[in-house]
Length: 309
Image 1 (cartoon, rainbow, N blue to C red):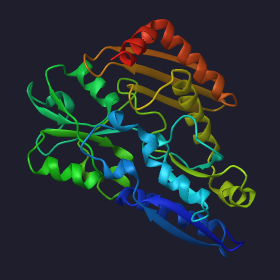
Image 2: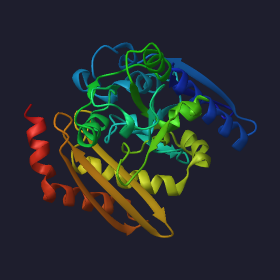
Image 3: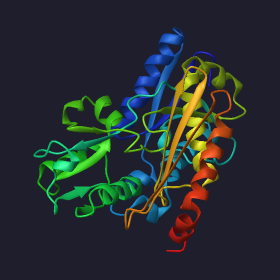
């Protein structure tokens, strides 16, 4: 990186490119003399779409090529959906900035039905998320739930082709792509807890790159950081990954942080819930506390059973 330029590594999907261009616009506004360039690339997670993420190594597959580009000096930073970022980063990397969170909730999308509860018993619903599958089986055990991967556009095409009666996507992704009108129902907490850090954009860079850290600091949104740090601390204590249906959602009210957590079983819809409140300046402690409550409520046995499969 030079004093006047910054290169942002990004996945090549339309949503990832939108997010990266959004970051570029914010950086140019914060640093008017800065030249920001996108460095698009395809990750292994993007190339393999015929198998569930849990079968091919998890969400970290969306990061590796971007991190290699930073290590080799081809990029200075990388833009991610924070929900796709593993709880522990490999190598000399850090999350340098977390942007203000967009809509964190899941979207029910259907061309015929107005809500999840309106679906007939044998309706076919597409979702690649084990968390969403666990929630679906808990709320609507008679539905046919099939794995559905690919970018937002390809998933909508399969819905429109009649392969599914409904699909579940993230509200933020649809809204960012100008597709908010496709949302028939927002699935809201506390009943429907979203993915950890859903709706938040993170910017990753090398931990020792002080100049890039300084540039990215202008985009940091402290309230969002507190919320997602609590959610991620909970997930970290539970040793969560895309192989385990875990949900977490934190909100900040004045100086108080409130966190809801959930662990589920995608095969039978079993759910374990817990919640707690704590100081907004200590999100890690709150996240661990909610995780311990989940484990005490039965999530420990559930997680052990899932890991043994």
